[in-house]
Structures are given as C-alpha cells and as structure tokens.
Amino acid sequence: MKKYHLLRERVASAGICRHDDLQPAAAATDEDILRVHAPDYFERLRRGDLSTNEMRRIGFPWSPRLVERTRHAAGATLAAVGAARTEGVGINLGGGTHHAFPDYGQGYCILNDVAIGLRAHQARGRIETAVVIDGDAHQGNGTAAIFSGDPSVFTFSIHGRSSFPFHKVPGDLDIALDEGTGDDVYLEKFTDGLARALATGPFDMAVFLAGADPHHSDRFGCLALTRTGLARRDRLVLNACGRHGLPLAIVMSGGYANDIFETVAVHFETVRLAAAMAASWHADGSEPAAAKSGVRNAFKAR
Ligand SMILES: [Zn+2]
Image 1 (cartoon, rainbow, N blue to C red):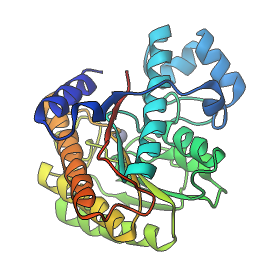
Image 2: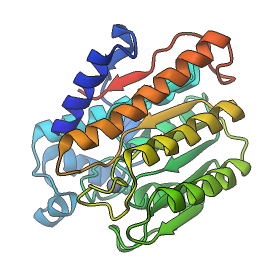
Image 3: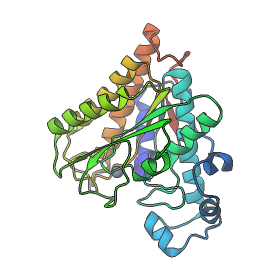
C-alpha cells in the first residue's frame, strides 16, 4: 500500500533515527506462522488455493507477492518485538493485521503479525507475558480470539461500537465508543483502559497498535479524533511504558483517510514521538529493564 511507502520515505528523510536503524525485516518463517495459524489455511494461502469467498473476505486479490508481503509484515513485527526487548522500543512501519484469525483472514488482514511476533518470542523463551494495546478504530477480534483463554497475553482494544467487525470477539478488556467520539471522551476512556490493562500485569512487554483510523477524516473509522488527540494517545502509551519499565513494540495498523498524507502524518507522528522517547531513555540510561543499548527503533516490511 502506498501509505507504507510514503511513511518510510518520510521517516527516512526526517532524520529521526540513524540510517541503519531503518531495516528491512526478514519474512516470518513457516514455523513462526504455524504457531498461530492453522496448517490447512496457511498451506492454501501459500498455494493460492483459498476460495473466492475466502479471498473476498480478506479484500485483496491473491498473488505470490501478496503472500510474500504479508510474511514480511509479520516478520517485521517479530523483529520489532525483538528490538523492543533489547533496545526499549521497536517499530514496524506496517503491521497490525488484527482481524486475522488462525484459520481465516478478514478485513485486509491475512496473518496476525502481533500474535506471530509474541508467540515466536515466547517459544524462544525471551518473554513470558505481554499486553496488547489496540488503538486501531476497529476491534482486534482476531487477536482476541487467538489469545482467548491464554493468561500470558492480555488484550485491550478501544474502538468504535458500530464499526467493523460487526461480530466482536471479546478480549480481556474492550471499550466500545459511540460514533463521532472526539478527543476528550476518547482520551479519558483510553487513559482509564490503559491503566486497567497495565494494572493486571506485570508484563514482560507491550505491543501497541497505533491505528491512524480513529482520525476524523478516516473513511473506515467512525471516531473523530484530531491529529493532536492521536499524538496525545501515543504519548499516554509511551509514558506509561516508560513508567512501568515496559519494552514497547509499535505497529501501525489501519489508516484510510481520503487524503493519504493525513494518514501518513498521523503514523509519522507516532514514530517521531517513539523515536524521541527511545532517545531520551538512552540518553539518561533509563531504558526499560530488558533494554541494553542503541536506539534501533524502526523496521519496515519489504
Ligand atoms: Zn482499523
């Protein structure tokens, strides 16, 4: 999608991280993917054997390139989780495909990158617990389903009540907002939800889906936040993770404004704030517990 290309260009030209911080990620391996997804679904996805209905539900036409792209997007979140652990903050300049279930995709989501990234690091013994903070305008139904009954990962989603998905899968904490909810009410509810989610910890790390689609100009979100409101949301997450010493992986998730530069501006601000936070942690030696050194903080799906 064009917004990812524009975002990467903007991050690269803004000088907010070192050139070698901005790295293409390896594709998620079959083993990583199969910790989350059903073998039959993944095999048919790879071969191009999903039915017309299954592809329609996903919303993209099948191509070998689509499969590669989604594997790399999942690999980038896996890398961002790793970077968060070692360096405090890790970012995937894409990802956040939270409508993907183990055995089907939906709403432009094919593989659940956040679940793949967390399960991979759990399997390698690098983390045990995590909290998912889903700020996309749509409920994280696939992620909620995957981690349902799994006490090691707490799922928090704040979203529009009347938006897709119309059948919501309860996560550990869901906050549904009325259509047209603006900055003040949103931030009050978000602050409360974030505090409640973090109070159920401690966690080894956090993953933040920093959706740009709560923005008032978004075509698919039904909320009405301003750019300033979304930046305040991002700061709430960054500051809370700083206070709790929580390594933080950030993925971009949705954003579909008619003016693509509006969406890119929201995502860019998320990256800029996170890079500034990582740099300040590094400067005063207060990185989250697992962090060591460096400010490597941006990963991109090929
Ligand atoms: Zn969304």
